[in-house]
Image (cartoon, rainbow, N blue to C red; front, side):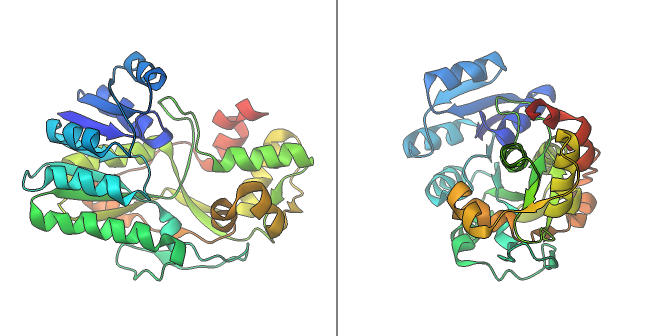
Length: 301
């Protein structure tokens, strides 16, 4: 297939694109400028120069493709709507990237939280209402000739296969630990995040393109861990020891902004049994703590 991928220079999209090419597909990728377009060419991806705000470019690229993967901004409803509208009545597959922060609880570092399945009702925070509405619009398009699918990853870790090597969360905590001389967690750090290795995450996209029913939504996760234990692993990797310090929430707000500070102090827990059963998805990537201590994150030492 000829598959149009937004976010092709990003962490998720770049890894999905690499795996699509390895599987024999042709990939066209969105690049915001000529420099990034050249990076895509180097990886065997045909670039389309434009941004998510260039709605006419998105429309044209989606019409020309056999399938579309939107792995760029999950909070851009205008781009998602244009891509979906371009595929209406075609039966073509459209895979949208969401994200499990839709289940975050602003726990302030306290543990607990609900483990969400696809059937668990969402009682989302106000800042996530727009993403949930976008997801619903995409799923509803299955009633109008779009083979729409949503992949909802959690905290993604590991070495990406594209231009961008890592997602921001773990490197941000590493940088904080290095600057502070000790690993730091918000509050007591007992809040729990589900997590998934980047290659396992990308595999779910390929399986969804091949096997997912129209109008389906999948969480993907390969395990879970508290932010306290994540930062203990960071301390071991940096040679700082396991003793952690509190990063006061007001400091986190100033340093990281509200989105990151609230997310990293929330419980975000999901279960991916549906992806395992329906897609045959079988995550096998390196474990999170091993990747932090002995794998791809050692480049940040």
